[in-house]
Image (tube, rainbow, N blue to C red; front, side, top):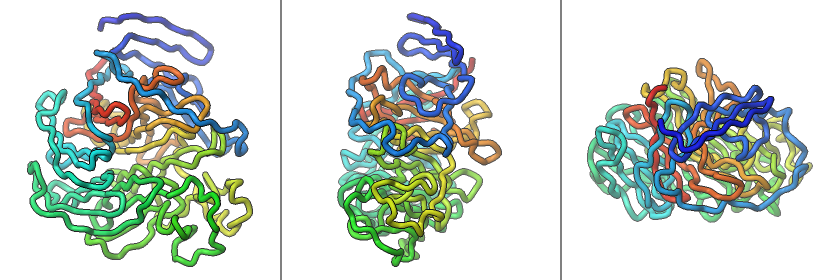
Length: 443
């Protein structure tokens, strides 16, 4: 491997190797996980762990409004990956690439949200380029969620989560267009605010989960319901009715019920392979300070309430709603894995391939879109959630970094993740509209 430049910074905490554009380096882990860090701490392999005991008081660090300045990467540039991995851009110039899902035959389906399309992408034998890249469905309103039914090797339908509805199309393996017209399965709350509508089926195919984000940040200025009169714990009314929750349906759209509530914006749903667990990556609220509250990923429990807007990360009260719903304090669940506040997690997937080293199997990857409500930027990377025998360890590691070059210049905003048929990791980013592939090449 030809290095363009190399230097080392040695401190009691860590050793950091920096390399030139398009290369990777061996990134030793820190002796202790990073708690509330920022872009300066990011490097492949750096461990992060935030616990409930680490949470500061609301507004202790103030709030800021800062976003990175988007810039196109120079020719030959690549983000950074752990030792032994290579990263390659597969395609660019997509319009709002978000969620990606892999079909049973290895075809990749991409929600091109800004364009209103679902794209069909097919890798060639090398895996380093798309042999097919064309629109599969067009004319949708903010498409985001994609799911196949029934689960398994021979799905008959592809389901699409758009801003105000769930649609399904007849599907045949290898087809480059739906084999029949759309069928509306359900109307879902729309309007302004969070528009991502991710979808996932339970392992047995009996339940379709639909993630619906809130309209507001924290229901500021809205009248608080005195009690729950809708049959869903902590469900708000008015413009927030039916929002900030995961909805459950049967595959035909019937037996509609709230599955879990108090989730401000569950922007990534992921079934954990070999289980009945349904995981969710959540954008938490803003304007409570640099380091509050953490975003999170969690196994969503049936009937659970996750606090929004009255509480966060368990029974911590949001000062904007102090004293309004004391009856909900002991009902607010604590999520499984806390993520650096304002990182903006989007897509999530579990690794069930065999191309990466064995220790990756069963772990999860999440795309962090990047902060706007933080004085020092954070996110803009792909992280790896660690699991041990199917249980989360509570921490995560940086996997792909480098999109944030300094405290301002951004070369990409990760959005979606998917496991290709060969076991490599594909990820999208909507800052420059590109799709990348991370594969293991060995040490």
